[in-house]
Image 1 (cartoon, rainbow, N blue to C red):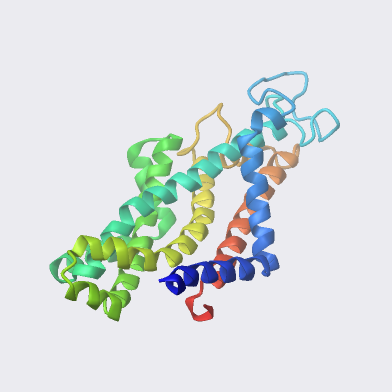
Image 2 (cartoon, rainbow, N blue to C red; image 1 turned 135 degrees about the vertical axis):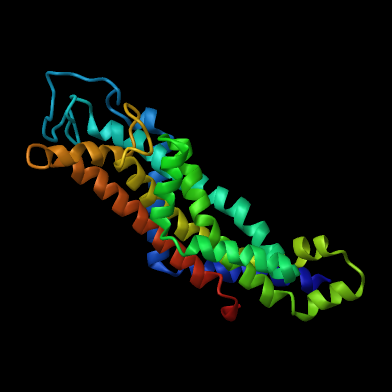
Length: 286
């Protein structure tokens, strides 16, 4: 019993050691952490009211007063980016949470029970996967109506098939393991087998996929906001800021450079973090 208790600790220690030893993963985690802290502390870090317009400071270039310049209404781009980070990161996190809450249970049921349940869930999943992710998200967001909350629901539902397919595949492989057969032999009910034996072992790849999907969701939210289907004015988001900036590319290029750079950095951070978690959680190395 003591050895069984020590083994998970050793695996956890090796996972942490491997992750910390991966410089790109640590860099990605640091980038994500910085953006999360800036978004959470937006009222503390902002230098101006992000909603305050001023016709005397329209499209001012970056300066000591306006670090990232001002926009077409004289609002501080830096302060609006901080508050826009809240919308973009929140959209990524909540969208993936919706996809996990819907996709993982259906994937477990399909992979564990098989039969007609697997056939129905798999056919619906394949039909959704046949539609490009962004096209499906745009269609759902247009149907639900333009708002940040509806955009998050649309992105979450569009990402659900990814988690259904991943969870189903993992469950199909794990349910044939000896320890699962042993649990069946001693009479454990199916719901306990799924929660105690199947789910904990499918969790690592799900965590990795969720981290990478957050980056995809942030890009999707920016795309929806750019099209007017996401965050609505005057509330800022990086996508809506780019939508406005496209009209002033020659007069005020900073209006697009900084939001676009922020999207690039945070997406890169989540991708590096996801790749690092994939390597650290690889069971072949434990």
